[in-house]
Length: 434
Ligand code: UGA
Image (tube, rainbow, N blue to C red; front, side, top):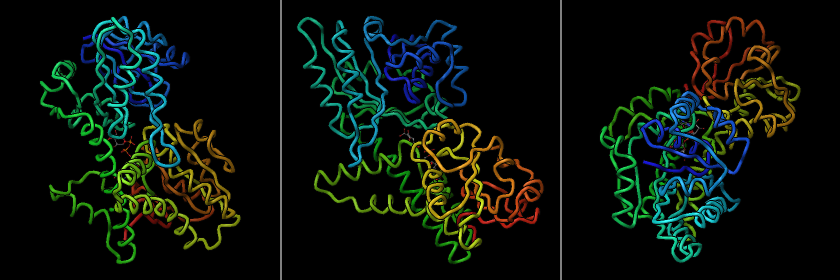
């Protein structure tokens, strides 16, 4: 099938590459010329494992190209995916301006009946309001435009695998014709056994927000259990294993740490809470999920103070800055709160991230960026593992002990081997490890 994918960020560029790899003919559209020319050379403008080879292969095979020209996309295809960002407003609602801008740019060029499929995360009612906008933009003789919704569930860092082999595909569509077109798009995946949940528009829109809010709830829950473990001497990793093997609970998203971050969970939890509030329902649970997450980001500072006393003049090394491993995304990263708190408490902060440094430099001040993990932790009183990059798991802890001036290692992700750290004469403290 021929299709366009409008908005070539993490979601859109990955979707475009994956659709092309499934055999479709795809044109990606973005308003940023720099991003378009980089993508046309087979390179993503963000860090995403496995994406670049897939881009290069599909471009070479003639099934994928990128443009800034909406008219070209309209002429090329009658199926148009939209994957632009819907950032959060300060009040918790989503900013829909990019979605509206896409329709305003695209619809005047459409000819014949077309299907527009939104993939961005939105509140229920958005697809219907975009349908109304599309209807207003259409001129007589242009044909009909239907807006459907197909929320994306990919995770940064494993976006390609998540797009090719999702647990499910959720689609909201009004007409059978739209549903049939979408079935055709995803046929290679549904034939391979991936379930398709075909439903109405508001249900599909809410399915995404509810999924993210539930996953965030799971993380805040296990973070609170970790905090109870610290009071009771239990080990949260074993508690999580004992819980997660119950199929009704499931083992995923039970990793305690320094709080969830990223461009999705913090925004989507707030948006769902705000949506419920606006509809007259006070979603109490989500208020607690947000609060627990904020407190969790600050607990590392308490652990440092417990061991070091005042932090004034103490040198603290942060290993990793990105909101999680395998991405350069710094949005809502816990490191932002942590380093600001350490600065405010008078600590001298050094940091190293193998991929996110450039992005971090635009958002963080008052810390030294090191070129390697060992440079960051040289002469440090304490080291905090903030992001679980694999290279930190391979550090030689005897070398680390030699390089540091203090002994404290705080494992904010429970990713290190406590025995290996202790064997080097260092003091290990994880999250909820008894
Ligand atoms: C999340 C969802 O997992 C995706 O399904 C969804 O499509 C995406 O948001 C989105 O709405 O676009 P993402 O933000 O890329 O994906 O990252 P996750 O892997 O879900 O991690 C989110 C945060 O939770 C990270 O800070 C991570 O470190 C933290 N986390 C995750 C934990 O602290 N513990 C866990 O057990 C799992």
